[in-house]
Length: 263
Image 1: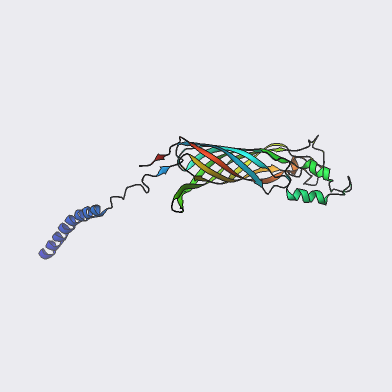
Image 2: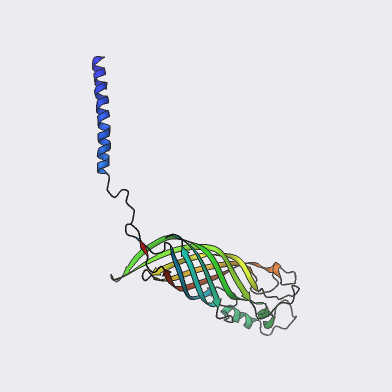
């Protein structure tokens, strides 16, 4: 019993003394960079900065008329990874026909009025609409940023972001519709839908960047302006959800002109 008690007492003293020593040794082995930020002296190219610029854009995959646009973009970056932005475009080429449109006109040559449900060239063209103006509001999230070099001498920062929000398309047409009891009636006016897509910045310096965006503005439309549901009339009952893909390239300026640097 005496020997057992002595052994347990010695063990307790050893453990009691050894544990603080081990903890102290662990603290001494801890890296001085353990609590340091992942990146020091990081250039915050977006945080608390305004972004304003202009550029050009074009639609893709339109049914009857292409749209080549002049557009503008304005944004405020709440943090280095979150921004609120607005974008708008104005169509400079309202009569720029797609190749499908031209093929359709060729196929409709010789069709006589009232022959059957097939429209004449004039009837088909009178129902088609085209993009006038486009507007979008969006929240942007920047998950990827980086820097690359060219020829070991030119270094540029970049980022990729995803965005989403409401979108607005103003449709225009060469003719008007007297009432909703016609077989052909173009869809005109503002349509509200969803705006979403991807974008990127390519920074030449703290102040200037190239900006590329690819968006889809998804609204209810009837591009042909024809009776789609078979009730004999072209009206709002013939609308369906339709994508409007737009790519744009902008020249962007950031304010203030000097980016902040993290600790």
